[in-house]
Image 1: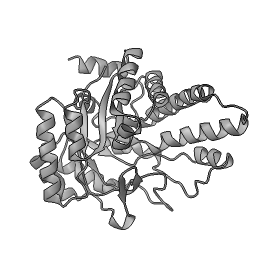
Image 2 (image 1 turned 180 degrees about the vertical axis):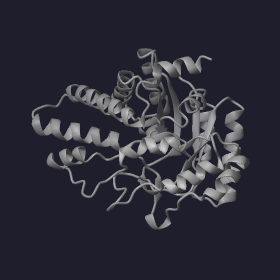
Image 3 (image 1 turned 90 degrees about the vertical axis):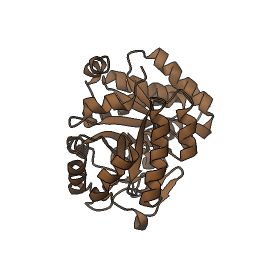
Length: 316
C-alpha cells in the first residue's frame, strides 16, 4: 500500500527512523519488498533522476506497481530523490509518487527558499508531501557532486525561517554525512550537537539524513578479495542511527550500501562460476542477499517490527 511520508513520519518521530532505499531494477525492488516484509518494517522506495533515466519512468513505475500487487502487506511511500524543479513537477503530475524532494541546496538561501516553496505549493495542491535540503553534503552520487571544501553544515539558526517560508514537510540537514562510499577518515562522525540545535529550533518537525550508508567493511573486503578496488571506503556508524532518530531524524537514505551488496554478489558469483552466462541464477542470489541486507538494516534503524502498528496508525 502506497502512503505519504507524512503519516510514516508522525509514527516514527522520536522513536525510530524509516529506511529510504534507492532502486533501479526488478531484482532490487523484489529484494527490497521481501526484506521489509521479513523484518515487518514500513519503508520508502526512492527513485533518483538517474534511476528514472536508466530504463524509463514507465518501466520503473510499472515494476513498483507490480511489487505492490505481489506484496499487498507492504506499507511504503514512493519518493523522488534529489529532484530539480522540472523533475519534481513531472513526478507531482504523474499521479504515482507520494512525495518528492526538491534539492536547491546549491543555490543561495533566498533562491533555495523560492524554489522549494514553488514545489511545495504545487505538491500540496495534489496531496503530495515535500522534502527540501538546507546545507551542503559533500561527496558524489549520480548528478550530485560537492567538493569537501564546499560542503557546509546546516546552520540551525536558519532552519525555522526556511521551514516557515517554504512550507515543506521535511528537511534534509547536513550534519557530517556525505554521498558515496568514501565518507569519513579517522574518527570523524556525525555532528549531534548541530542536530540537537536544529531540533530545538523546529521541535516535532521531521528531519532527514542523506548520505547515510554504513559502507560495511565486510562487504568492501569481500569485493576487494573478488577483484574489486575499493580502497579507503568508509561510511556512517550504524549505531548512530537510533541516537539521530531520538533527535528528530525520521528518514535515513541508504543507496551506496545496496550497490555494494550488488557488487559483492556479482563479483563473487562470476569468480566462482566463470562458466555461467545465465543472468537468472545470480539474480536470485542477489534478491536473497539484498532482502537479508534490508532486514538487518531495519533492525539498526529501529523500524523492524513496526509494520502492524503503522498499519493501524495510517488507518485512523
